[in-house]
Length: 457
Image 1 (cartoon, one colour):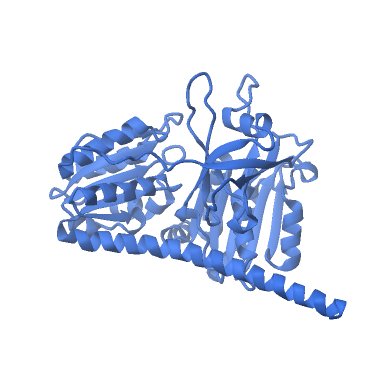
Image 2 (tube, helix red, strand yellow; image 1 turned 90 degrees about the horizontal axis):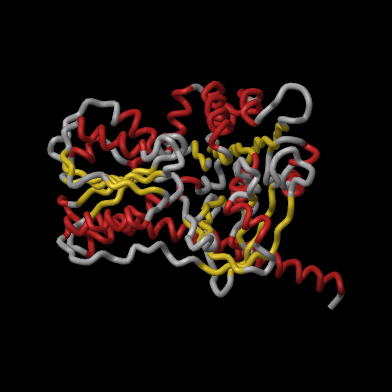
């Protein structure tokens, strides 16, 4: 066998193996989505007309998890249940239900999750009679924000104004507090007559090993940003672009801190989860509890407790659809995951990245990846703004305004718009710029149809 023929055969084998891995990953993601649809159909059919409607508004997937656990708990107690996202909830469905359980997350400073935007605008604005309906409410929030659980409160207030009767007092959950969730389980027992509650302990963390940590922006005028990678130990996790990793923190001063969530910047085919994490500091200069441990204290080879959680509200659109990715800072992580997913397809509808950071010299995060994707055609267009590079400060929202016409053209061709990064400043500025570029009504339609999605923190 000649050397050229041998190299050709090895190349063909490698390409075939790569295509097989891509096919397996796509199949697993689609199978998981189909399984969720089948679960919902099975629960609804078993419930019949007397099903308890479980309406969930979830931004990062936690509220959806609780909705499914609630449905299974009711089913185990002999009570039919029908889980339904706020994105699919309408007035006719509410009028057809007798009992309703609401699981409502609050995102940012009191906002509704994106999936609930249409419901808030069209249904909650209406003057309706829901006096036939009895409801219970689980409000998810974070007390570190002033508008704690405010979307849940808004839904409850609207239901009461509409004449709905409460099944039990509202249950508020601060940052996943286990005690509050057990209280919700107790209320479910009152509905089913059960005497014990199922174990709703969050799924056990998996074991991961820190294998890489690289400073990405040495010399930056902003905080240090690190690329971190973790390999799984004794397990083979699956996830999709847009999913979130929940990292368990070590016990400190005898207490177990709350977990932290990070957007995943890699795919299962990479063999590891990757993140872009900025070292945060408190006003007194002390490193942040989670970011300080991950970027400074943890050593290469150390084990970390972590689980990857589905975040369906930020999953990828069809490969044939154009996608506009907008973000800043460490928000590049979630957007990088989507570009990696696009790279698995021979042909796509195109991808456009608009990204903002401080300086081109120090903060062009993942520039080598982006340039390679530009060269290969995975990335159709790249526009970046660096706010500290002389003259008037330009942020990523400035790029949206400057390129309003081509952005509208992309949307006309069916583009999806994904935003990832900081809640304060960036996401609000980008939203305002998108409204100006596309029109408020058009942006609402994109939100309602699931073509405008955000992962902001």
